[in-house]
Structures are given as C-alpha cells and as structure tokens.
Amino acid sequence: EIDRMRMAVEWTLRNEGITEAEIDLVLVDDEEIQGLNQQWLKHDYPTDVLSFTYNSPPNLEGELIVGAERALRVSEEKQTSAQDELIWYVVHGTLHLIGYEDGNPTQRETMRAREELVLRALGCDWPLEQETP
Image 1 (cartoon, rainbow, N blue to C red):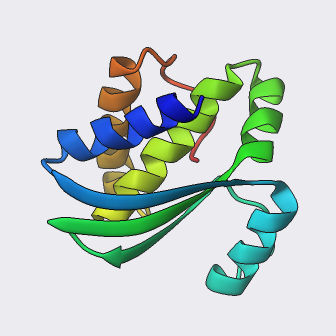
Image 2 (spheres, rainbow, N blue to C red; image 1 turned 60 degrees about the horizontal axis):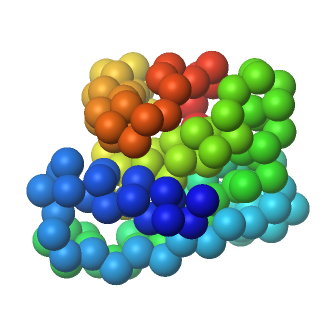
Image 3 (spheres, helix red, strand yellow; image 1 turned 180 degrees about the vertical axis):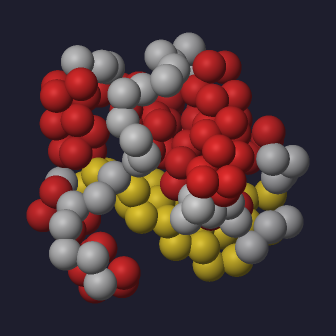
C-alpha cells in the first residue's frame, strides 16, 4: 500500500507539472491526528489529512499526515475501499501542498476535478461517497 501512496503523490505532482519535491508521508490514528489538528488548526476533531508546506514549488517540500484510522472507519461506513479512501486523502493533501484550496464551492470543484484525474488513473473508484476528505 505504501507503493500505491507514493505513486499517488508522484502522479499528483506530475499532473501539476512539479518535477522537484520532497514530501514526508506519515500515517497516524485518530488520536494523533486530532491532537495535531487541535494544535495547528484549532479544530478539536480527527481529520483525514493535514498538509504542511515547507517550501513552495518549483522545489516543493512538505509533509502529509494522513488519518489511516479515519480512512478505515469511513470506508466501512460507506462500504467503499479503505485503500481508495486512503489514496484519496493522499492526493487531496498533495494538492493542498501544491497550493490548491477547497474553502468555497469553486475551489472545491477545481480540486475535485484534479483529484478525479489522479484517482481514475490509479484505478480508484470515483466518486467516493464522502463530501470532502
């Protein structure tokens, strides 16, 4: 599964024209991601992915902290693939590292279109049955 997550990051970057990047990917449980979400964004709940950009493109550096426990729980609730859910979080977080936002309907629509390109290319089911990662 790690290889597939790495491929998701690489495809996302390539689709956005980014050829130089160093991205750390960390999988955590709900407790860990909730603590980080509270610490950095003041949101007291577990989330799907946190993205931290340390250097912007063209030499992108950043970190993705992915809620693996959440992906499993959501996939069970929605009866979707846990692996596809996890890959979605990785793609979503990578797009945030690049600079995409999803705070309003227009931004969300653009982000979903970019996510769909990568997820379909990787053979993931689309759309997944969740409003937003």
